[in-house]
Amino acid sequence: MRQPFVPPGGETGVTPEPLKTGVELRINGEPFLHTGDPDMPLLWLLRDTLRLTGTKYGCGLGQCGACTVHVNGKAQRACVTPVRSLAGQAVTTIEGLASGDDLHPVQQAWIEEDVPQCGYCQAGQIMAAAELLARKPNPAESDIAQIGNLCRCGTYPRIRKAIRRAADLARAARSEAAAKAGEGK
Ligand code: FES
Ligand code: FES
Image 1: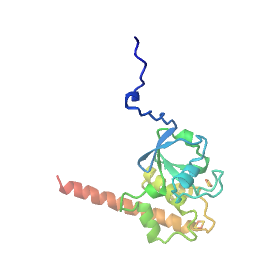
Image 2 (image 1 turned 90 degrees about the vertical axis):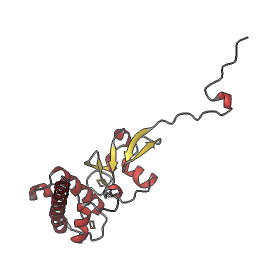
Image 3 (image 1 turned 60 degrees about the vertical axis):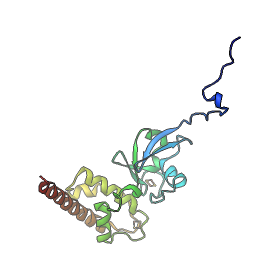
Image 4 (image 1 turned 180 degrees about the horizontal axis):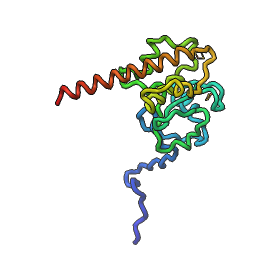
């Protein structure tokens, strides 16, 4: 007589859970599977699902830059980025910018220059500045001027000063690392 078909795991009496499908991405270095609406804007996922509320909602139209995050190192506006477009991509938010206890040079410079006023736009400003310095370690004034993030409090002069200071801090850190590497030879 033919034996009845027993599905894998059936002999244990445990019904396997169906595989979850969704959008796989990385957020601040951690893998994440988004099983909700794939058209949900990234900003909603960050703030409402993951409670990463450092990234702010300003205009919701891709205009103000309050929601700026990095996607594979590039500055991107989370309010107009559908999660479905992020399959296999790496997202970094302001919460993931520092390396452990070491602040990113832009964060350090922001503190030293006392940049924020109300603070609402500042996470986006910092993420935009960090991306600029990764692309152009010694940015010209015209490069800095191209950051289009808005600040209703008008902190632009301090932002520009802090970006220049961050470039100096990053340069000093690179020289120190190179000197240490030289000592070890
Ligand atoms: Fe995204 Fe304004 S909230 S650009
Ligand atoms: Fe208030 Fe920029 S510090 S909006």
